Amino acid sequence: MAVDKTIELGDWFENHARKCLHLADARVEDPEVPYTATITGAAIAVDKMRLLREQSTSITEDRKPKSIEERDRLLMALLDEIDRNAIDIEPDACDS
Image (cartoon, rainbow, N blue to C red; front, top):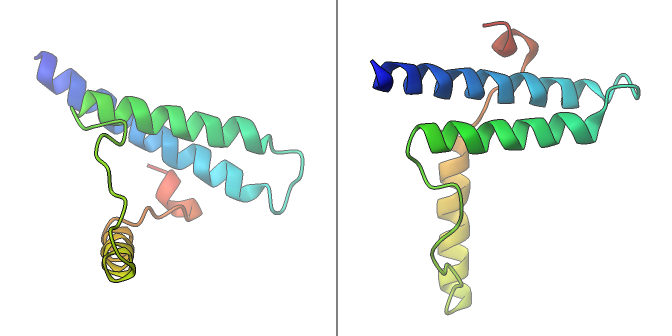
């Protein structure tokens, strides 16, 4: 039962983060939208979501490249990961 509630809360925080990002994106059209507050809300929601899913919330390893070639390899791997895990912040993604 407790595991189910943790999963549900993790999903809730993920949805909340998406909504905050959508609001921050809307600031382009409406300068009255509180950008800093929505970005901070998204960051906090992602942190809580990761905690509830027992995922790391901080960088705990040294990823400093030892050479330019290693830096380039790490950068390409990071870009590939971003492509695979991209968050859709289009308006219809925030409706659910």
